Structure formats: C-alpha cells, structure tokens
Image (cartoon, rainbow, N blue to C red):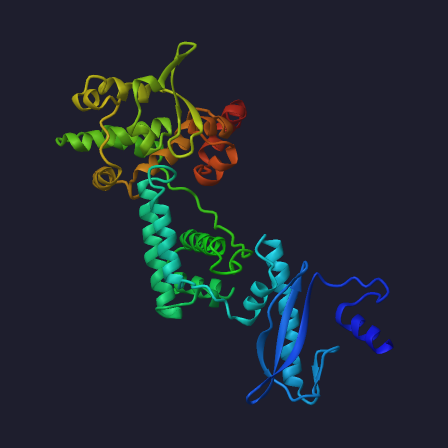
Length: 418
C-alpha cells in the first residue's frame, strides 16, 4: 500500500488521501501476438472507455511494471512509455481547450499518429482556402483583394514544394516553419519585412482553416507574434501637387486620370469611393458643401468638406458626357488602367515617386494638415474609426508645420533679433 501511495505521488503529485485523479486516465496491458508480447493502451474520459491500441513497444512477460510505467532492464522503452503518457495528457488538454472532441479513441489516435481520416497536403489546404475565399468575392471581399490572395497562393505553394516537397502532409508542420518561411521570403525572394508579414498572416489564416476542418489539431503559428516595421507613407508634397495641377495634355484620358487623382488628394477618397461618387453623396451643412458617404471597404461613414480645389473639379465635369451616362460625378476609368496612366503622368511631371491611386488618399493627410486640420478631424474625413489608424498608416510627420507654428508664435521675437 505504501508503495502504491508513493507511486501515485510520483506520477500525479499531491496527497493520496484526496484521490484527485486526472480526468483522462489510461490502462496499459500486454497482448500476446505471434512474435511475443506487445504493449497496448486504452484511454478513458468522462465515463467513456476507448479501445486498446498498440504502442509498438515489445515487452517480455514480467518486465512491465504497470504501477510505475517501467520496463525492467529497458530504459529506452520506459522513456517512450512515459513520454506517451505525458503526450496523452497534453493532447487531451489541447482538445478540451479548443472545444474539440475528447473521445478517448480520438485522443489516443492523435498521440499515436494513426488518425484514420483523410488529410490534405498543405498545398491542397492552400488551394481549398483560396477557393473558399473566391466564393466571397463581391459579398465580403473585393476582386483586387482576391487577386492578392492568388498571388500569396503562388508564393506559398512554391515555398512548400521547394522546402518540404510536393506532397507535404499538413500534420507534419512544426513551429520552425516560421524561420524557414522568413528565410525564404527575405533571403531568396528579397521581400521587405512588412510584405513578408502579410503573407505570413495569410498562411496563419490557412492553418486556422485547417484546424476548423479538423485536418490538424493545432495551428503551429498561432502564438507567434512578429512586429511590423514602422515606415513613413509615401505622399506627394504641396509643390508636387501643384506640378500635377499645372500639366496640360492633348490626350483626354490623361487629363481625366490626373483630375481624378487630384480629387482624391483634395478629399481623401479611396479609388472605389471616388469612382462611385454621385450627386446624392453631396450634402449642404450650414452653407458648406460636403461629401457624406459610407466607405465601400469598411462601411464606416465619412464626412469630408468639399474644399475649393475639389469643387472646381466637380464643376469641370458636371455636364461631362461620360459622367451623365454613368450617373457619377467624375470620369474615372478602371483602377488598373488608372495606375498605368499615373506612372506616365508622374514621369511627365518629374515626380520621383511612382504614382498610384492609393497615394492620393495618403496625400490627403498632408493636404488637410496644410489647411490646419488635426489628426482626429482628418480621421473623421477619411472614414477611420480612430486617429491612431490614420497616424499609423497614412500620416507622414514633417518639420514644416512645426516651423510654421513656431513662426506664428514667435514672429515678434525673430523681428527683434534681426
């Protein structure tokens, strides 16, 4: 009895008098087979007993001590048994924590690596995840977002095929995957850190998808946290905006593209909102014309006063044939074509930065700052739920407003010093 008490304390700790047994228990037995005896184990949980499953460990009769999970004279097999016992408890707790099945047979099959259900390769899982996203195009995600997912799919498929083989079992992935993928992206593909983070986040979503479908029992990347590098957004200066404004083109398309881009610089509208702008989105508040509209991307309502530069562009196209036919206020072409034309326009204006439609939205933060609006007010005009989002993703800190404010405060002091 004393020996059993000591054994219990070694295995589970605490006092034997309380008899607080683990919720998942195991029973180990020897079964005779043609070549000798093999050790089998059965789990029991919440009143349910599983079936006996083979551990693959051969034992001579009399060698196995059940109370201590020891095989006399065989320390290697003893270690394997005790490791299995620890793995059984770990997997049970993981299954229970995630709200997954804790049936003894399922837990034991996970530990012993004999899951019966068919499991896709990681390449198949990536493809199935992207196909599921395709069904959401137009409802929850935009076409251009899905195009980005397809690009991520190509990158991930190439990585796994090169690093792990063409038919990689998704259950074989380990947390070291993060280091392998980081090296692949930064060394072999020369991606910047923040682009790597986007693909890494996409991969983590795929593994969450695999957990939901019970292809794997855990997401090996779930608890890995990586910091995004802070970079200044690329925006145009007021001088560069004036350069664009002063250009004249013989080609009408170039003029339309330039004007639509400038309108976004003056209002902060994203391309989709600018292209879909209609008369009903223009309101009058206390004699001030403004745009009141929900962002197509987030559904958040934004309120942007129409500044003189923006009003001038709307007047320019109020009777334009294309605008009249489409029922919109600006003659916008597709985002892809507009970005192609913007590259030419930027080169013509002598602007070093490569122009694209989203740069106009970011440039609006500078434009608003020049007009005297603070970050909170700018966030409201851009349809952001808080100013921290505006500051982190769109706002570029400049020295010019500081100098301007200093001169306003200490103009007299400078005059006296001179």
